[in-house]
Amino acid sequence: MPVTIDGQRLWGRIEAMARLGATPKGGVCRLALDDNDIGVHRQLADIAKRRGFRLLMDDVGNLFIRREGSDPSLPPIVSGSHSDSQPTGGRFDGIFGVLAAFESLEAIDDADIVTHHALECVIWNNEEGSRFVPGCMGSGVYAGVKPLDMAKATRDRDGISMGEAITQLWSCFPDAERRELGTPFAALLEAHIEQGPLLESGGEVLGVVTGMQGMRRFLIEVIGKEDHSGTTPRGLRQDALVDAIAIINALHALFWDGDDAIRFTIGHFELFPNAWSVVPGRVTFGVDFRYSDVETLKNLGDRVAPLAAEAAAHCRVSVNEVVNEPPVLFEGPVFEAIEAAVRSSGQPWRHIYSGAGHDCRFFPQRCPTGMLFIPCEKGISHNEAENAEPEHVAAGAQAIAESLLILDKQLP
Ligand SMILES: [Zn+2]
Image 1 (cartoon, protein in one colour):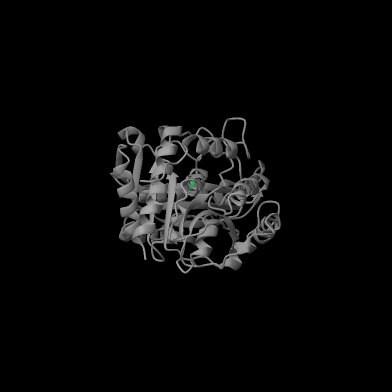
Image 2 (cartoon, rainbow, N blue to C red; image 1 turned 90 degrees about the vertical axis):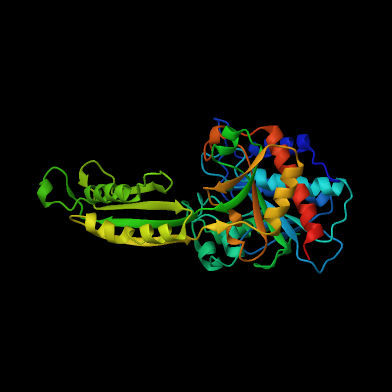
């Protein structure tokens, strides 16, 4: 192919972005639209402007960096990911996909290649959901599966709304053009670290992603009664923690499958008032359930609420389903273009199924969509120790650049 990405330039950018929000343990804390996250947007926008690329921003704070094509009537071919991180996140999650796309645009620009379609690098806003809950907000709103009003009204722990943070982002880019939410893409590609151990353990450098697990999330609230811990006999208490433990044990048993293929996690748990001398009056916790099969997602997920009510002996229980996303299947032109680019790379590769959710999950119904993985060390992610090899980062970006060119030729 007539394009070669610059692995050193790309690695330099990985390192530069890792300084924005760097933590002492070598990771990053870059929450959506905080100063460091906006710093990522600024740095890439500065380079983009020097190259004559255009900046477009939408109402939910997604940034698109655009290299024009020869036919302005065609929708753009878009690649990218997110720049925010978990509070103790790594240097590659999300930002690798953004920089692989950006490097692809630069390499194609350096080679003076004229494409028919405009090529765009996207930074989706608030993928991690650690500052503004829930995650995948920018991509979900753009794709029309999440309401803009809800996203903008969400507040962080300091009371700042997503809407206010987006206004601040806009103020940093007065010359950005407006991109209407939902403007069609010709295709969408996302590169990401695997966040699991399969590629590394198999010795593969590239993974062509075949699909993504579905996910259901439930917020469970157990409402008991606050009492004095010194004076109230245990037999008379409505202890919300005791019932929460019973519910959690029942759920753990329900979701245990012999193959250990079902992903069931309670990673969010809060106890009120959380004081030594008070019987807990209220507990809230979150159930995160992921699987590849629609039937199982339905059957097991639908049992959460009745089982929780049944397991609580003394307290009232309410169960709210906050996420219900079906599994995703990748096929068609983007999947094939990525596979062709990966095959021609000479790198060891495999097909791989994604256990994690990613921004591009909302797009297969809207446009041809696909994903590419590179290995991360020991499969560790959402952790400051997250690591990836420069050669793998470069190989991933090269495959994205080539995929973009293949798609530009093939797509109408
Ligand atoms: Zn990510």
